[in-house]
Figure 1: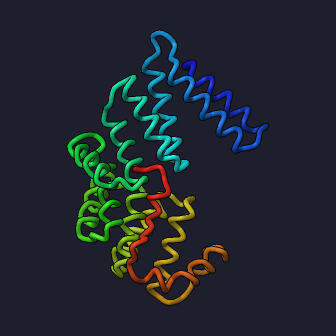
Figure 2 (figure 1 turned 60 degrees about the horizontal axis):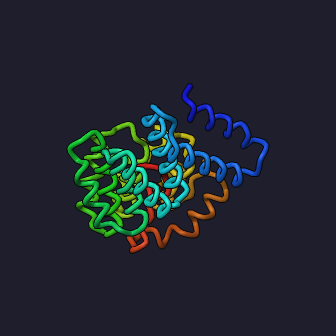
Figure 3 (figure 1 turned 45 degrees about the vertical axis):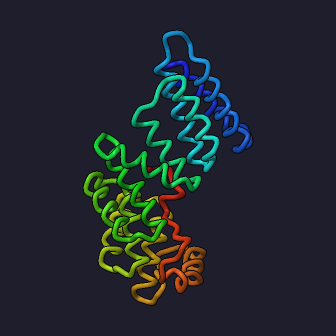
Length: 235
């Protein structure tokens, strides 16, 4: 096991005896130290640790911090498709969609193709450019057919547009691919609520209450379209 992996494993064990937020902050601090002060001959390991730090920051919606660390990471180790994808995610999350779009488009011919298509779909959905969003969602689902986040977001977009058949198929795929993800189950329940007019008896009461209260306003697209993917670590 590498030095970085050993340190991070120890931190995970220590987290059990600490306040969760304190433990998480300590882990981020240690990741940053490991990434910025690599041992001789371990630059690849240190780079991977730094990439993991940026990914964690994005998961926590610390998007500006992620951009700062990306600047440092690329200055020290150079840029590649992986860091470009992380940068596009951070730019999209901070509202710099023009820069995010450029980065995603540059990744369309490489190994990050499906993630780039997914990111472009989210950008166009946020702009309410439905045809372009649907085109990229379809492409992403073809290139990564087992990615539940893509299916969920495609289904949610179809739901907002009243395309019941597409919504049913896409959201069902998302739920079956990731049955433990509550957002996917909630979106499928929302589809049933809106398409049939009756609440889904298999969802938690608190979720059903939320759906009941928000169903009317969600029937029409709005400027504040929220896809589950905007709250998750991909793409």
